[in-house]
Image 1 (spheres, rainbow, N blue to C red):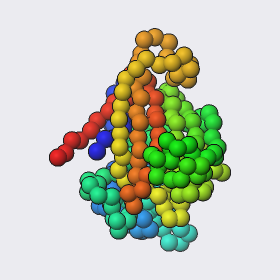
Image 2 (image 1 turned 180 degrees about the horizontal axis):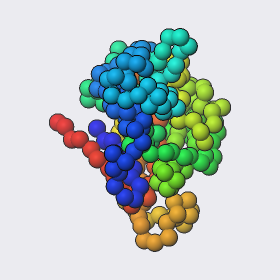
Image 3 (image 1 turned 45 degrees about the vertical axis):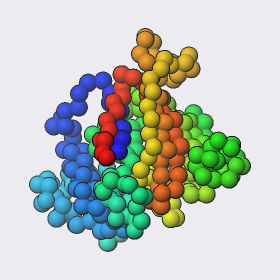
Image 4 (image 1 turned 120 degrees about the vertical axis):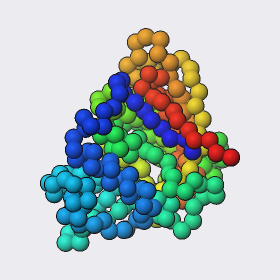
Length: 262
């Protein structure tokens, strides 16, 4: 299944990351590998600090980092619990047909967390409108049904990487309409819906082309750098279309990897 790897200039040296960020990334990897479910309780801070051989102060910072990404949340006097961001296929009793075990669609913020990168978002436009016929067919909703639409710029470590155009059926998550996505994570918001919406698999295509004048301005392109246009249709845990996104990446700040299986 394709996974996105938008990369800023330069190579990432994991050892150069703050210790708490390294621990947060390791903990998220372990949560995902264990196939944990939404609502599962994490071990205590003391136990986790001993497991990762760090101080409780560092462990608390790592947990706080995961909490800001919507992966876990704290319950007073009870500890830390999974919200769904790091959960494996056991998050739902039903996985889409053909979904690789333990795999899920990775969000931009999730990628940044794993690599200790800071994320910044600037929403260009957002709102609710009726879906056109073509969008309705892609998302399997009725023509004219409420559609949440958003265009935004995404940055890693203050370097602009991509301009995204997101479209989602509002019926799957009514909170989309009143959430400030300059600060909130789209996937974390979907995971907090009732019922939670978890992107599990996606149809994904990529093509290269020259940027338009508007795209050059948005992506700070001043030379002959091309753009990579990625179109993704993500499906939730019930194999229902969840998100239609067209992402336009700077060609020098994006890498595409895929695992091909029969």
